[in-house]
Image (cartoon, rainbow, N blue to C red; front, side):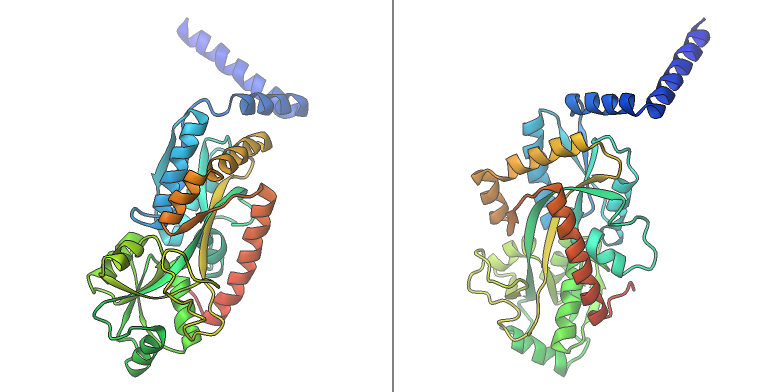
Amino acid sequence: MNKIRYLIVTCYLALLAAGISANPALAATAASDSARDYPNRPIRYILPNGPGSNADIFSRLLAQKLSDYFGQQVVVDSRPGAGGMLGIDIAAKAVPDGYTVARGNSPGLAIAPHVYKKMPYDALVDLVPVSLTDNGHNLLAVHTSVAANNVRELIALMKAKPDALAMASPGVGSAGHLAGVLFTTLAGVRSLHVPYKSAGASIIAVVGNESQWTFAPIGAPLPHVRAGRLRALAVGGDKRVPQLPEVPTAAEAGVTGYYSTSWAGLVVPKGTPPAIIAKLNTAVVKVLGTPETKEQFLAQGGEAVSSTPQEFARFIRADYERIAKVARVAGLTAD
């Protein structure tokens, strides 16, 4: 009897699903109902970075704010690897129901497509932008034993001893890798690239003098700079940062044309209902717009920002095209 009931229920659900898929009006109604109740269970937030990074800090701050806003837990699922592609690929292939979101960032969406010959996803097609969440500043930092107190001295040292100083990064195709390669290319110097599994690991390597320098998102190296374990030489953007106002931009310090920052935002799998995307966008804009959140992001070396889905889509494409030019100039390819 139980088997018969099971078969009846299974057939009914199959027929119901077929009816909905064949009837656009029913499908629209079902999507509207799911959006009305959304979220009614925990949301998985895929982080394509490891612990100890700016991305980790910002993601956990945002996840907690969204948990409070929705009254449902937003659980951070850290999936580092392949320059951020591993986590982004998991998100791209997830069920598009709003219960899997991801931190879409410059390595996974704008850099990787120009570094790797084969991509497991289409960065501009397989993920739908929800909103920007943060902008970060990149920081050039060296171990305190390096005989360079400014950028010009570091360049002179690298020219005198090519490949003698090791550059740490969170991996091939990461924002830190691109920032470092762009620096050596524009400065006309050579340095041994040592990729690590995460931003946190690459910073610890420089602190321990396993590698001698890095150009990384500022949040991870900042505490070590303040503690005197690393020396800050430059920032990558077009203006100085409030966390280290005495540190010049790389362009100011003599590397003409240098510009490198990091950004991220919330993305969902293609096919996620527009009404759910709208709900997520409203939540992100709300929680990131509070003075408390802005101060928390600033303290960690970043800037809390938000946007419409359309603005974020245009932003991704613009940076995608900018990185394409940078990658060609730097000769950036996977090791």
